Length: 207
Image (cartoon, rainbow, N blue to C red; front, side, top):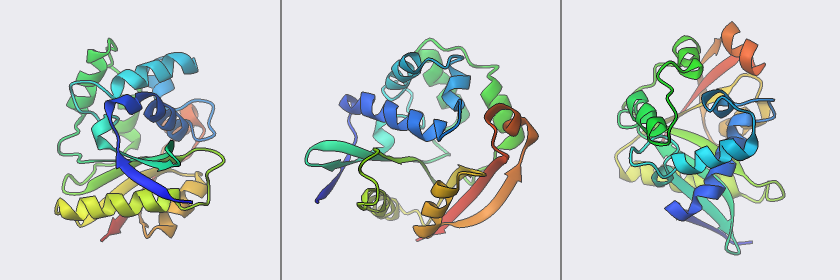
């Protein structure tokens, strides 16, 4: 089974929206975009996410940050990588404003102020590492990560980080299997109240 890794295009908006929602829900009742878009309606969330991948302001969900894995021409996996010095909170808010979402006083952003990490702007951040059900354990995520790390090295990066929820054992184990090490764990009562997870884990890899 041959895996092809390619850069995402604006035409991949629907697939990327699906992967972003899958990643942020992660077996929870609600995810961060339920909070940001103030709805639990999948159709509405996916529609907003599709728009978010194609805004002028290049936020963390922008299609230009994604690699897509294909098998026999079918999109089966995704991995996002972005630079926190470029993809700032201001850029994210501008993107939301662009699609008609006023989130200046966002509950989610307030939550991240309390429960999130101060990310090193000299690192690369990985996010939305996902694969379709039915295509697991065929090497998709490993191929995506290998290509992403190669691209990061060519850009001059030597450290990459990612943030995973406490309790997301499968995701945590997979990142560790790929060579990531736990840097810090932050338990947060406010996060637990909303998402039912104890908090967040910061992972890092040197390459």
